[in-house]
Amino acid sequence: MNEFVLKVNQVNKTFVGGLFEKDRHVLKNISFSLLTGQTTGFVGSNGAGKTTTIKCLFDFIHPDNGDIHFFGKSLDNQSKTRIGYLPERPYLYEFLTGEEFLKLHWNLCFGSTTPDFIERSQEAFRKVDLVEAKGRRLRTYSKGMLQRVGIAQAILTRPDLLILDEPMSGLDPDGRAMVKDILKEEQKRGVTLFFSSHLLQDMEELCSQLVVINKGQIIYEGNLPSFMSEYQSFEKAFQVLKNKENSRE
Ligand SMILES: Nc1ncnc2c1ncn2[C@@H]1O[C@H](COP(=O)(O)OP(=O)(O)OP(=O)(O)O)[C@@H](O)[C@H]1O
Ligand SMILES: [Mg+2]
Image 1: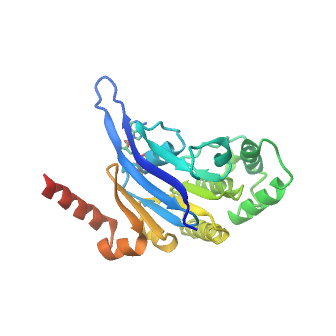
Image 2: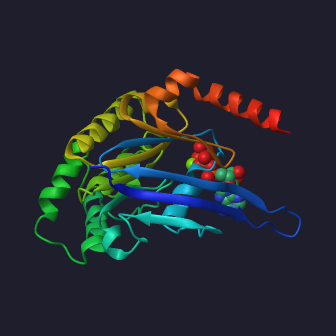
Image 3: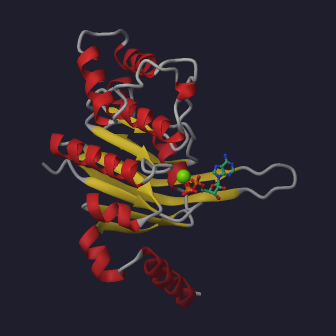
């Protein structure tokens, strides 16, 4: 099935500067799309515009212009229930226990604690290895545990589309391996997965597709093997792009 789960077309974002600051045009005609059941990596250096793009998808940051369609239409409450999202810096209510935190998300999604919450939350805690800690308040969790409970929240409702901003950040090698295993399980379930990272090696293991962003511009969209045979690394891709820009001037 080759349906688009997400289609982003010509999105721009400018952050308006203050009295002594210039405006910053940080997203420049961003276009890309995600196909049903595919895993797409969103790669770019620090400050390239990954988080701003992802925030624009959900209108947490309002883009200047452009179109964004999920499941063939503008984002609405019904499509929100089909999406799991992990922000770059999740805001977690530290006085809630892990279980209360997941229940809050479930209720925000479905309006009440429907009977399958218990089974689904147990499944999510098992996957992120937090079964023992689920009754503890989040303020007692380590950084890695907080990242993992954030991932549990994102996969809780078995979404059709998972959008994760740097899911491996802050995790030790065991934690990274665990997240990769979770994402592989989600792939088997048929999820459409989109996640950001500044490391190409994170992508190689999981992604079939790649979207590369550099200084607010998409410099590559396509499949990962083609990218690797063309550029070998995204540093090299940036170099080739810079050379192309210089030769245009
Ligand atoms: N609220 C804001 N106001 C002004 N500039 C911003 C704001 N948010 C982001 N920016 C700028 O937009 C650019 C892109 O930032 P963004 O956080 O999207 O990058 P990123 O690719 O996610 O980087 P990282 O890998 O470090 O997370 C940066 O230059 C950043 O300083
Ligand atoms: Mg970011």
